[in-house]
Image (cartoon, rainbow, N blue to C red; front, side, top):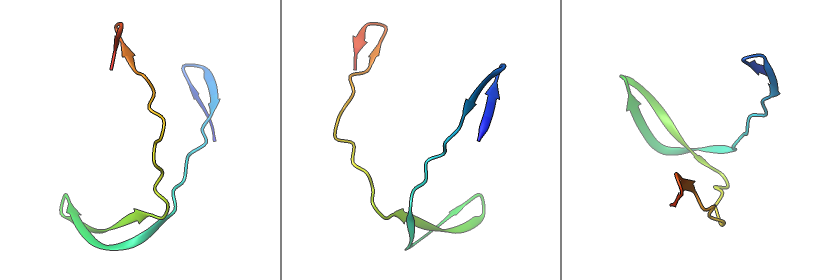
Length: 57
């Protein structure tokens, strides 16, 4: 999808996740819904060093 922000164009490629229904139901703002769970949840194996104002977190 072609988008633009402040005159700069860029392509948005949304990520998709395959889900399956679960037995869990929830309610939010008065509306009930079925919670779905991921088929293959990804696990982050590499941790990136974050730095903010010179301090590594």
